[in-house]
Length: 258
Image 1 (tube, rainbow, N blue to C red):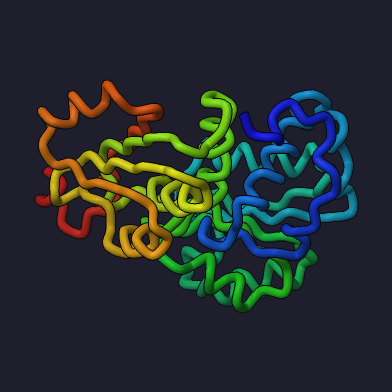
Image 2 (cartoon, helix red, strand yellow):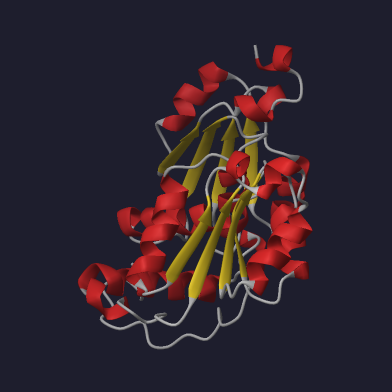
């Protein structure tokens, strides 16, 4: 089991101070294990975090539908004592009138936001926001590109259930082409040792090339499985199965989805 499991105190870890959360590629094993310790502490003593950011304001800018991600960020911000301001329905904001992402971010920043949590349908929107913002930006999903905080949650869940990450055989099943959570979790897994990743999907839905290149550069073993009969056998020998839905809204051609 990892040393972080069952720890009573996370210590103070400065690796995240003032840092944007844009891509799972930006974080190290040390970063992830620090998060595990902080999550463990919350489970043991939720009150420890109450009011830690009482002088801050979190701006939730959700230009794309969300239930779980929006409410989890809102809840976390309130536990930490943040004031919360939100754009939840873009049709009720100036975005519907053609306001650019640049102007939205600068406006929110000028109104005193301490941190911006952004969900946007465009790939790269979070990185762009971080480049123009004076305050930290958290990527809550940018199109089909990434969803790094979901990867952090998934990584922690796997570590808790399996006693650690090293040496696991993990299969992803479903729409791997457009799933931002699969991409981010793949990047995060590359920080650990002796990982084997199996991507199970028909060719049209297989994992994107940039993810494969990232894994290859880091010596992570992976396989693409397109034979569903073979996949049934493989699933019996894995440690973790991660299933994702078809991302209908991201198909450029509706007939391709059908």
